[in-house]
Image (tube, rainbow, N blue to C red; front, side, top):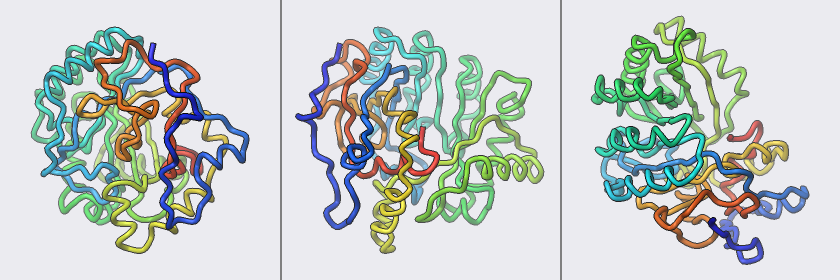
Length: 329
């Protein structure tokens, strides 16, 4: 069993000294809230930063020129870790996971070790992988978690690139044709939306209603669940915030919107994230920030089991994103 460092030995908050907000760890202390692991039931696998898009809100600086991509040996190490653990969910992300050549091997061999597999997609990266990839996803009942910033064409293309909205809708239609997102099907298609600018998202209920109505009425697209999350001030989004003089104001918005009720459901309490190089983190955002699991670098091949309940979780000020408003679970 992995033994994490005690909280007193833990790494510092990595707070930006230019931002005048209460550090996240201090906020938790002020609210008398503890943040430690429950049972870890989800293994998140980031297969690389290679992506066909250069999204303004990306916390990883993913893009077509990134060389960081999980190799075959690391994929096998991840599969072996899943086999000796008891994860319920495998959450595959990137970059654009579809661009990693080892993705089919990962899905085929990790499927026996999880109740559910999720694949996070920007949709347009899936376009050139049809129908072979979708046949694989269909066979293993992989849940597709597709990101779509807006049902407004201009807003989506502004954030992701010209023509991306049209490509995304075309892929959603193809997924619907084989059963993904249909009420009578067991093939789940969920959508995730992030704001296009330096502001917090509207309420999930309000946004979900709009997405369902507009996509079905205008383009004949249906889907299952909808999730609306704030952007994390890391990577390319942080650079954009800084360039537009919005960084400090955005962090202030996040911290002032701190919701103590959101802490209980934080994904870092039940998830462990493995990066493209096999090293472990509490979440994909800590991966982007370079905050390793337990305060020291541990490779997935060294882990005998999931982290023990009660293990401390690395925090920094970007964690305010996950506790703002309704939270980020």
